Image (cartoon, rainbow, N blue to C red; front, side):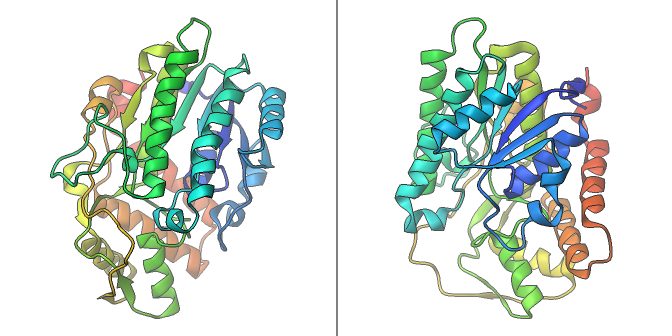
Length: 362
């Protein structure tokens, strides 16, 4: 996979205690990478990081804040990583209304701190900066946004990530033009689902909680449309992008969308019902709509990732939801080793990838 580029590489991964970060830490480790995680302690109970004992599976796990410049710089300089995957963030739209200052500090200043620390560490050759599909100025148009369209965001989370994209572009032009400097790209994905996510105000974790508590699943905005994708889909894009940056440098230092095919764009109501169907129980009801603004329609155009990287989504939304619910059912029934089950899902996905055989593995 990925031309064996990660075998023996030192990878600095921020946000490794989070949902996507936990999956990426495990996948990188299985690829032979030496993974050094830097993140706040898990903020959910349960958490995938704790349940799968990920801190024991990777090379080193450090609890720290990306706003702590001194600690961050020391850790990176001690490690001397080859590549950085920056996932640490305040990732929740609704929380950003309650904590706007924390959201901006973490997402914007925190990202700048990580970029600066990596820039001044001469071992770093590549940097994958993970943002979100919500970085675009969303006019709720009936097509996917392209990478060259304006950044923006109605809520504080979305706009903070739009700022990170603008910051990244400026940082690249200001400091990363000369030979020998690291190659940095941004990766945009959203509405990522998969086992091990227990964050509040995310659809599938909320559905799973309701089912296991024996209460109705209450949805706020049943007709809202999102591009649903399994966590391994965007992570495969991040890993492929990292491979290209390590192999060919600044040729791939740009922004890329990683989203599902158009047939995986479903409403909240459709996804909620699929969760019940795969779980074999649960009832969906429509609750009171939130007074906080939430986008009704958001899609990504992924033609650039397909054309430039050779990446393409593998799973349908239905497959993504099924894989996700199977993970939770096994976790709550405690009938399998959930770490082994997770690694088998990664291995199965690797076998299913259509592009690795024809493009990425060359």
